[in-house]
Image (cartoon, rainbow, N blue to C red):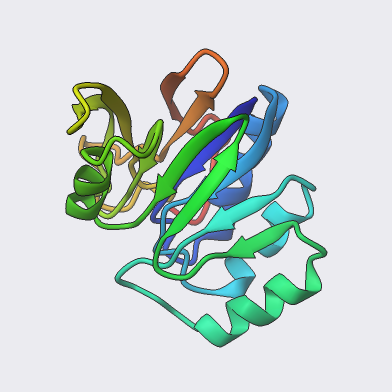
Length: 180
């Protein structure tokens, strides 16, 4: 199963929908949003693409009540988990949070195959040793909106993950956006 991992869209609908569309074209069957989504309008175009979106909030929470109301209206296409999420997708246990230190801590537990976080706006894919002597994937998709991303052009980034192969690739948004 392939997944799209995004974060830090900060109320920019166009780059979020572009990343979801690119991931869907690459075979993604679900989206994980690692927080700082902000408002429901950010999601409308992405939900229309028809693949499930799992989201947590970040430190820029936005209108939580509106996010829960939207969840009720989408027939399962948008699942808002609150502060953090424990998911099982493609037979893999996944923990989702916004804050990097929470992500690293949960990756160390040995309970998860993949931990996703955001917040820093810097994309990263790596492994974290855990207390059981194993390793856990720890990924940060950066900012799908390109806000405060490293580099001169602040390129929006996201991650295409393959849960069968446990392969995670940082992607740069290919479709031009006018909101960044």
